[in-house]
Length: 301
Image (cartoon, rainbow, N blue to C red):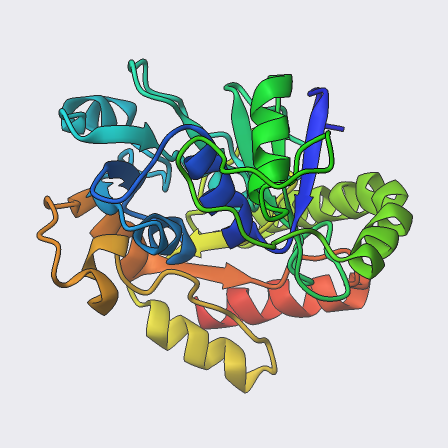
C-alpha cells in the first residue's frame, strides 16, 4: 500500500515515533525539530526519549512544516526532523543533513519520501484498529531490523536479547488481535478513502467557506474549514445537531508541557489553530448526513 518493503507493527503511533527516532540515533540531550501544528505526541515522543523538541512554523495557509524554517533551525545538537503529514497531505521535506522521520499518522496509503514514516491505527483513523496500534514503514532493511529489536526487548534474529545501538529496548509490539483486525480492514481502505473524497468534493462545492487545502491523493483524514468566528460557527452547528471538532486549539509550542522549553514564534501556526474547525467526513455518513451538514453550515455562515 505504501510502496516500501518493510512495515514493523508497534503498539501505537507514539511508539512508532519513539522507535523510529531511537533507530536514527536520537538520544537524551539531542534536539528534534517538529512543526507548530500537530497532536502533542509528535513532541511528546521526543520528550519521552529525553530529547528536546524544537517547534518551528508551518507554511502560510497550510498546517505543514515549513522546510525553510526547519532547515534554518538545524544546529549542532539536532539529530532528526519530524515533518507531519497533517490531514493526509504530504508535508514538503527539508533538504538537510540530519535524518527525517515522517509522521504519517493521518496519511494512510501515502508513499514515504524518506527512509522512515510512522503510522497510527487509533480506531478513528481511516485504517483503525479495534484498540490502539501503529507501524513504522522503512525502506532500509537494517533500520527495520533495528526497530523490531527496539520494540521487542532487544531480541534479534538469533533469538538473543541485545543492547540496540545505545538505546533502551522495551516491549511495544502490535498486539496480535489488533493485527488480525487490521488485516481484515485493510481491503476496505480504498472504499473508505473514496467515500471521504466524495464527501469532501461536495463540501468544497457547496459550503462556501475557506477550506484547508489538500492534494489530490489525500485520504481526507480530516476535513477542515477556516473561519474567524469559529466558536460562533461551531455553536450554531451544534444547535443543528452537527458535531464539530477543534483538533489543534493552540500551536504546539504553546502547550503547557513545553513551557520549560523556550520556543521560536510560530505566527502561521497560531493563525491556523485559531481559525480551523473540522466537520464530519467519514465513510459511515449517508447522503442525508452530508446534506444535513451542508444545510447547517449554509444557515450558520
